[in-house]
Amino acid sequence: MEKLMIAGGYPLKGTVRISGAKNSAVALIPATILAESPVTIEGLPDISDVQILKDLLEEIGGTVEFTENDMTVDPSSMISMPLPNGKVKKLRASYYLMGAMLGRFKKAVIGLPGGCHLGPRPIDQHIKGFEALGARVTNEQGAIYLRADELRGARIYLDVVSVGATINIMLAAVRAKGRTIIENAAKEPEIIDVATLLTNMGAKIKGAGTDVIRIDGVDHLQGCQHTIIPDRIEAGTYMIVGAAAGEGVLIDNVIPHHLESLIAKLREMGVQVETNDDQVFVGPAEKMKAVDIKTLVYPGFPTDLQQPLTSLLTGAEGTSMVTDTIYSARFKHIDELRRMNANIKVEGRSAIINGPIQLQGAKVKASDLRAGAALVIAGLMAEGVTEVTGLEHIDRGYSHLVEKLNGLGATIWREEMTEEELEQMKNA
Ligand code: EPU
Image (tube, rainbow, N blue to C red; front, top):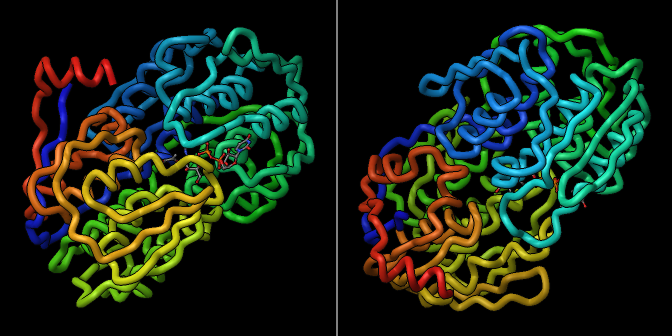
């Protein structure tokens, strides 16, 4: 097992290219199940979640070719194989196999998903949607069993605005009979990306990106070619890196419109941010000011950037308050930041950060993906060397993180953990 070593304090400069969006990729890959001929997705990120989904498609009989970042899936020989255990447990997004397999085979057995521990993450809205479409859904020993004689379009109002439920219901509804209307749908760019793929496959979807999505079911979907959107959360992470340790960082292959809430907050902090069609430039701040942040559904401030931004705010003058309205327990990075000398306390759903503080290198542990990003940013800001364990979380979502940061002039490397460290981790 490896850990990440970061020698802090090196000024970063240059250009970093953003990969395809993880949270699109993990839905686009299962969506290929719904087609009857090969689908090609171009520009996928090189992350472990993509690899696991590829393996899962092969487990159910798909033929998958994956070279560099392009994946071609031939779904014609797939069968509705039960997947109650194993790799489905390794990622949250395996729940998209439910919607896609239900849509194609009218049945599916999928183990309850894994993923980052951020507080309770129920899937009741997904299930409510499947049931409204005519499926019988039961939970048997940690696996969800779905079965329908036929799927019929329905009007579904989501009680909670959910990215996963919106996409999953779209996947199940595109081959249902008649019209489905999803009300109070989530509006994230990844939903539009999935709807674009499905539309290119022959689905009839209107309103993706608004809070009412209308789907007219079709009998057949065929293969197509699709290029994934850039990862707005990876881009946002590098924008924060630029603000934290940069002397001018250009983030390339971005849709700046997807990042308006972060751009506004960075500017409010005094950070120089310029945008053009597909790039964002982040210049150094003379002095950063504290700001308050509340995470919200898109286009509000994304919960996925809350943790990375918290690290940056340790260097800002004054008191900042970061409130996460989406996840109640997305604060596991705070204890680790405190080990690095940060002055932060957590009260309910808020973190209160007093700055500016000079962070110090320390041994810290990433408990989830974005906590990992937050600790890497803190390590770049810190004096001395920071060791980050829990790398498997970071590898789930950041493509070539070490190479990209070193390309900007950082000093960061992976190192094998010693026997003693592994033993300590086991007993922790
Ligand atoms: N919720 C329910 N019931 C449901 C579904 C969601 O109560 O049936 C609640 C959740 O507990 C949460 C809120 O609704 O409080 C929003 O959850 P949502 O369903 O939108 O989240 P998700 O689809 O499970 C995706 C991303 C997350 C990101 C959230 C919010 C994927 C695979 N994951 O999760 O990404 O934080 O949307 O934007 O797309 C990450 O990338 O680090 C990550 C965790």
